[in-house]
Image 1 (cartoon, rainbow, N blue to C red):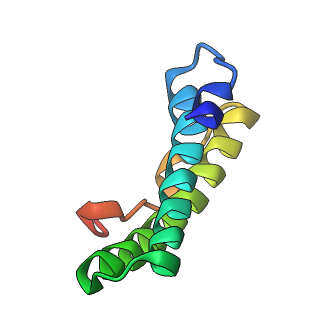
Image 2 (image 1 turned 30 degrees about the vertical axis):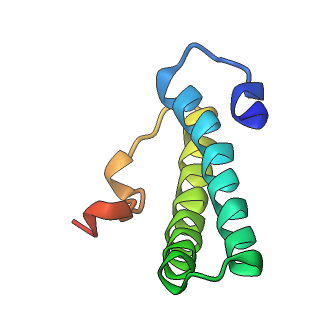
Length: 90
């Protein structure tokens, strides 16, 4: 939570959203890793594996998108790889 709120607000809701969501997802990945180390329930462990796999990809996508937004205008926003997430690929 601290890292999520440590991101300085820019006033740009898109950049601020991404800057806060990245550490939020990183925290979820870390918690899932701990479940894989200490957890015993096979279904919970499987969920943890799914969280690690999906959110690692989402973190990478958010980092790339944030870098684009921080550079300024994006002349080809449709050219950015879609984030699959829970909606799957378009």
